[in-house]
Image (cartoon, rainbow, N blue to C red; front, side, top):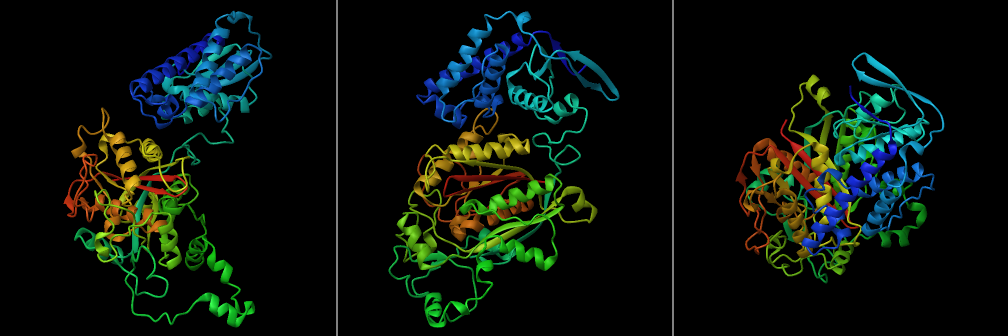
Length: 564
């Protein structure tokens, strides 16, 4: 029998609140031992025994206290977004104190509801009671208490006296829907958006790249493993570069051409606006890259473009994988591109103090992720795409499978326009969500292609986040076992194309069992004590690889690939 029956919902909600209060108290104790503010502590999830809550503290508190308010005949109040941890704790303890004074039998229902609940294949049982709410008796199922409550309320089932507790796996919330709503729901359960009720598996069946190391994936990858660098001087490229603090960039190799001193503003003043092409505006639109590919090849599936700064490439691939997983497409071409080597761009980033400015005479040494002498990133140009495909579709046509895209996680720093928190909380959250989505433990991660842009704060924050994620009882035993590299030392920072080309490198690391090097990593400080693959590629068995992308505005994304 897949459920148990409790006659008194007051007792069940009280039990839930007490469990929640114990966990909140534990968070306070742990925060105190680390001399941290408890709100920052919970938001960063820097705890061990609270892992089952998985960032649902606020939702659980709100749901449970609303249950209590309804049982007491009180008005329910939504939590304020800015409410503090102390506020959550007080609301929980107040609800406990109130419920302890209530006689469970004094709570009256309003009407009789009939629900058919599954007892196993081909078996059902009709249960009649005044009111129903679905709950769980263990802390790691609090999220599903909230989910089930919302589902039953949507079906018109009021809250009241009787509670049915469904001890289903926390990784299979679909069971909650199927058992408590025999008819197919209009809304799909979390993480199960395909019509079959399960996420479809997504694999990588094609790769493409244009980078400062060369045209094509094979040439780019070979030169990367050989330790080449694509960063060059641009001070003689044209007017406007020679006065910039940073006069170097990572350029895509190209044939000779003559700029002729052409400037759009000169042309406009001479020719007038009537000579402007009617296609001028469409050509500027971000989604037209995807649009042209769709029109050329007749791709009629989702035509989608992400615009999230340096996280764009990773978001594009992650979003495309979800289109496939949810059954909206069988094949998606996804990636990112950037062509931004211009005095205005270099000048703007220089004003942000984001670029390296001390290496104009030795450009190949400028981008040096995790190195003691790093001082900023180098703007690069290029593009990369991957072909994502539903697993069975790929197998049916005999496609070559490079790897499986297992997980995708996103987060926001909610902190600063251009800088991350030094604790790396946003990066940590994105990585944790990717692993949770992939159902992979930190200890099985063999390689991380870091965002590692060669900035002082950014590299340190990501390094701290990676070690926080991968060290511990569920991860690696020592920092030397953590394999991390940043390929931006070789190709610079491709901005919108960075996440895409670094996804390609992560996939190839799995496919060929090799760790790409971190170029120019000559000196490290004691905080950088992982294996950063300095300057020379390393042969390693790679079954699981992650790639991080972080952007201005605090947008973060992590992709998790695994050997198929």
